[in-house]
Amino acid sequence: MSTWQITRVVAGSFIILSLALGLPVSPLFHSTYWLWFTAFVGLNLLQSGFTNWCLMESLMARLGVHREQS
Image (cartoon, rainbow, N blue to C red; front, side, top):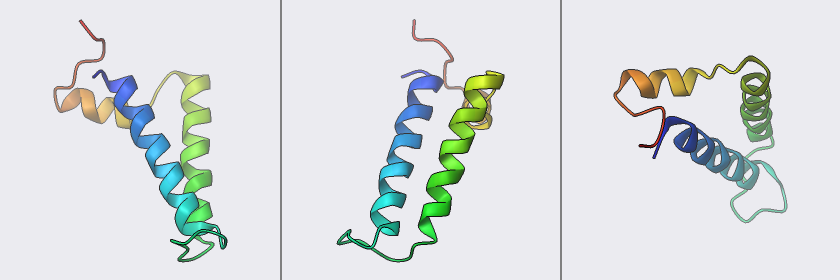
């Protein structure tokens, strides 16, 4: 997997998990404050779409994950 694929999988997982923890109708409900984390992830995705820069992709590249799939 390349960095952009991993980033999207992790972001999607974070959003699903934080919604499960933040929505009162969820069996995993913990606190509505988890919805702030959902908003944070969404805003970072939006920002990376406009600036073409993502901190997570930069960190993964430093760890040796390939940017493009060969």
